[in-house]
Length: 289
Image 1 (cartoon, rainbow, N blue to C red):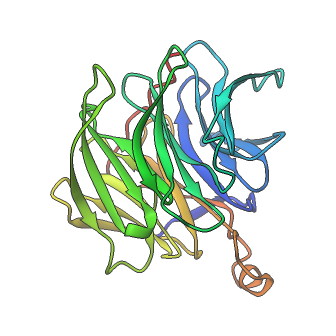
Image 2 (cartoon, rainbow, N blue to C red; image 1 turned 90 degrees about the horizontal axis):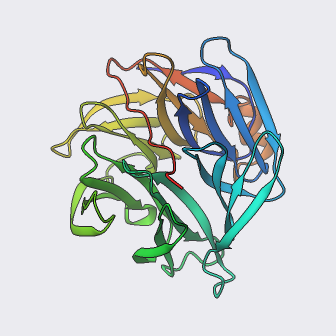
């Protein structure tokens, strides 16, 4: 399968993609471009919201608006008015880390992982933000959190610390949001790229964008790679199912750390791509707070 360009948005670093059924639009962030983007997959209409800081991941809220993970803090954000309501800091004692990847669990808790963007040390974390705004540690010793997504029944959380080149599968308690035993779902050591953002389809397959691998792969529940989507640019970052029937896989891409020559060779890098892979996706649960 080959993904095709649907929006030549030229993001510096597109990430955090998901579909919001409340407005029938895909939403994602251009982290380094300090902007939120949205796209109507039926009409082709797109929109950009300039943000005051880097937005690394976010989710819509059940009651309207968004919860946003800026690089160093969390906030509620109203995209209609631009109003911000600060919630708290992320790892205030570490000046090298920032938030990176995040997604709500099936009950509407927001799970956010960080990265050390200076030294690459494994000194960041993954936290859970509950509906009441409380923050709990889930995983520590993280270098670059990615691939956070949940099985259809919500009882498995998938996650990668990208430099390890594996996708982990944790037992997850839907009632409490606590992690249980961990196993390795898939090893990417022999893949052309390293694991970045992921989503789950209705059959339980994990779709993963391979950073610097020019592809998105489907990891079956048994850990094997059973489908491959070729992406015509170097740096896929994240993927999500969208559209009225949730039958289209959309893919964000990046220009981060690319030279002018590399961008000239791939001028649609940073664009939004799509493919119909023959399976349907699942709706992400909005943040419950």
